[in-house]
Image 1 (cartoon, rainbow, N blue to C red):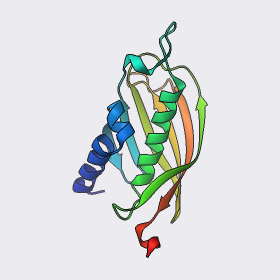
Image 2 (image 1 turned 60 degrees about the vertical axis):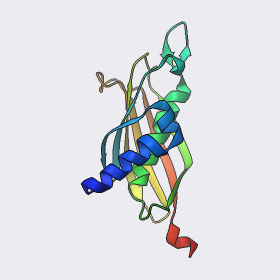
Image 3 (image 1 turned 90 degrees about the horizontal axis):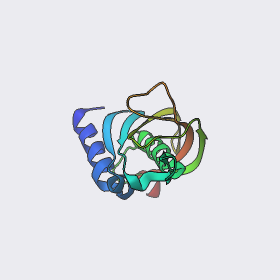
Image 4 (image 1 turned 45 degrees about the vertical axis):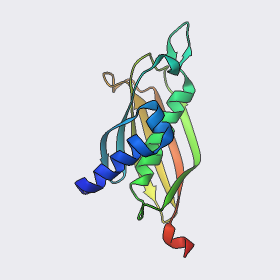
Length: 146
């Protein structure tokens, strides 16, 4: 993936996807079929105030965004549309009150669907997986509308 294309993707993820912008997601790495995203920590992302564990919905959002952005790397036009068809999450351990890393990898791509796998962990504990995900994303191609 060329550097100017990477810059476009970074801008889209960080500034154009409303949910990612609201959360403050940062792209650490992006290549065709792969993305590594940083999800910041804020008190609002806590699910259980007694134990200070991250809300499972925040983890699910990280899974969905990582898979969706990995799928987006196979778009052929800025007018293409990527949407989640199906997603599975296995919660391995609770996330603690700190930043998350979400990695998304494409396992299989077809003309209209992309299958991804996602991994969530804290930046300083890559070996301690918080959640694993699998996703199926559709790509509606602009040229299919003609």
